[in-house]
Length: 467
Image (cartoon, rainbow, N blue to C red; front, top):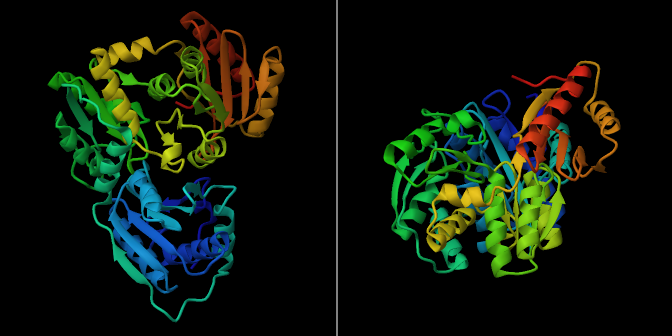
């Protein structure tokens, strides 16, 4: 059996079912993960949690993962259908040494994958391209595994754990009065329904769910709210129902997007700014982490309300690491991930929603009014480019750096150049053969002018946007 080495990604192990990932391949992958867990935890017998999403191939892969772990004599918490934030929380709540989640997140229906992490005390340490995944890749491709145990493992069933996640998040957030507004939720037939349904039932709010049935064939649309086309149905339903808010989690629930009452898509940076405002108001001197793509808006919030902003590279494993390293209260990523120190540094998609609902109640303003008041800069949105044949991404970055050498250069992730009234970040994708540009400015005219200047220069290098 030949295993495609390309399934070992920057943040997980992922490929197309069944050629890249199936029950047989999953067994080998889990044998590699077991060896990595044993070495990282410094013990061969440990407690592990396993969960899965609703993809059509997930039950088969899940059973292979479970039976393989059983053969190592482990104590296995079988969480079944569970969102990714839910299983992250399970690692903390149940004192699990490690977790394995069967999911391909927001990818199309033909994909599946495995996310995994270990727990160190009250901190989550996610597998990434620099921790865990390279070792697992080596072990799997060389079939260098630990021997199976003579003792069969113990299975402990944990059903509906997302309800526990909801209840404990509400207790953590504290009591507040839910606003009397109408909400539309599009869970895209995916995992977000497992925590959003019980949340709104507990809050007693008027809520309309669309595409709520779990269905791994994604009959309505892909569960990727980062693509505007996948929010179109939600936008239309918000307007049709004259609702006050629209909500769209991604496939495994670790990202969440929002739509205002006018049907407009709310940039994740504005939700980060809102959470920062609420946190800094209540807890002066707290830190927040933001990725290098967009920072000016939340920096201004921090300056006004007495907080500190820390920059980090893009990628959920790296951001969790930075939150834990700096003890920042939370982090907001431009792709719709929100991380909280008190949840091990992992994602909690409920808390940004609760902060938004609290702000609506306390101010009496509409969602659009709140977001407008927090929109202090202009953003280009992410523009993707293919790397020209015969060039590397670094060669492109070097040329751009030389052209804009009068700005302040930051190299946390790719190339960032900062000026008094604008800045841009140019970075290589961790998941695709693309380079990505994000630009922000204080004024719309400056944004348009500088963006065109950059595009013209890139075109002169043979670098053109992807349609």
